[in-house]
Image 1 (cartoon, helix red, strand yellow):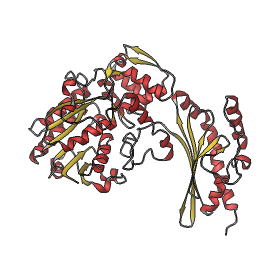
Image 2: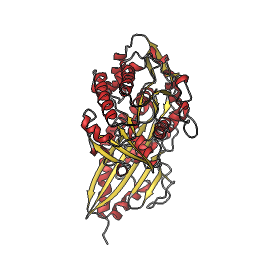
Image 3: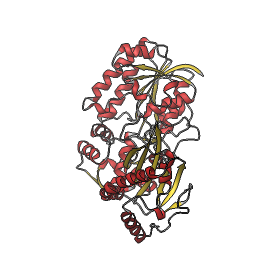
Image 4: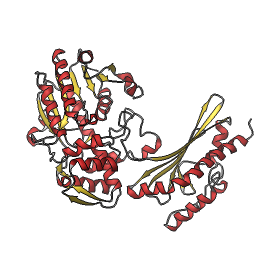
Length: 490
């Protein structure tokens, strides 16, 4: 184990949660400062770190957190605190700088934003000022400046994802023609992790960026291509101010307008890493090299299907990808997933419920509203899909990989879980999953239909069929349980 003790502030945030996981995996001694320890109660690294519960504005709390620390990561921000976020961030940075100086911290590591020393937006100006404040009392401060971070959960990436996905045609501010220098979250985490192992303390400003420099409009087109969407039509207009743009972003995407406003404001600047400030002067590139925009987006989107298998909001395991959405991410992080969930409790045994679940479809039907299923199958055939004509191999038992009407068995765990993947023609990805749990003398069935839309058409499709779900899925769950209870016990 590395004997240096490192402190991570902002451990409940997007970058902080991933950094802690990587530091723990790299065998560092890690302490985290959090306002509410309950927020990290269920993360996988909780039992491998020391937790200090306190307020970043309280210098006494900071003294406790910084005692004995070699390297302190400053990953705090106040973007969602309203129009006065810059003042809030300045006060917070001053308190931290004072506490770090008193505790004789050897190294502060701060993640800021590329400003090219020409920051005109409130967001980037605040980021620059925070870096200056942290270094103002002489504690060696390594300021790492990044542009747009690509990864599920990053506010900048979520703006890009949802704008591109939901708007096939869009009028945009002229800043979409500005150049950006995006970087994959994995590469950011690599640089931050290496910062804990510097041979000597470092003071200075260093820029980080990925392999590609491109315009924001180019990023939208790249996202659309990789996500399998039609090419987006982007019409820049000069009349959309940053304030109007942020309201538009808040309406179209799940990113709150309070966060969108400073982010959109920062896009009026070109944010390209300065070669003279390359971080490779003091540390190595990430293992395997930097990621291109294409590979970063592909990896960010590769977790989309897993979002439907209940990994979306849970913590990643130690070997999971840093692109994966985590429990510490904001609630609006990740791809949009629609779902219809029905949960019923029964006195039937798990074996009986499983027997009912496993016989679904084919000649047995879908436990009610079979006319609706046949209608859906007929419509699927009209557009070249498989419809319901495939039936099933065995009337009572299923195997992973085999077809079941217009579904395919994706996962099967006897008496526990059955997950089906839809193979009909759809503007997205659909699953139907049944999960069985036993609680004492009772058994619970959880039935969930999930849909990951692709493009605006996917969202419209879900909402167009949602009324049918209201009578198809409740009846299916009730009749399934009714059949399970009719099976003789013993």
